[in-house]
Image (tube, rainbow, N blue to C red; front, top):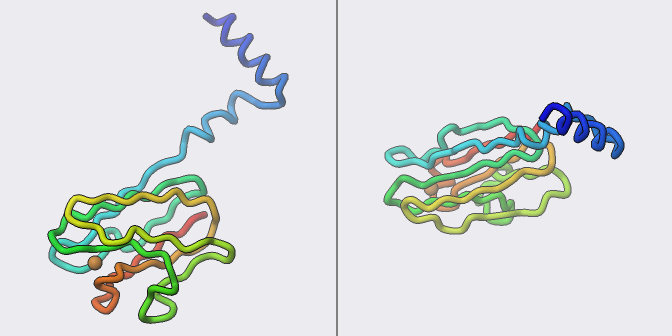
Length: 129
Ligand SMILES: [Cu+2]
């Protein structure tokens, strides 16, 4: 088995890859964000992740919520902000127990809203480093 491992390492080295670099790809993680049941908020309201990580939103509430990263759908300019060059995206209406996930591939600060409760302060932040 040790021989196979050494052989594999040698083969990877031949491709210009180091074995120690491999786990970097496996470290992409998923962060969970819940959506208000009693209070109209995202929990946690702000998350910080790395490029390649995913955020998964779940709506445990009976009320509809949304995860909206689309500046055109914000009532108040500035409540939705995307890094330059990032295309808008939107979960649409999420009923109870619905989930929505997005993998972030560009660094920057993202501000997003629930379109149904923006006026009640349902605004969240994702920081990608
Ligand atoms: Cu909402």
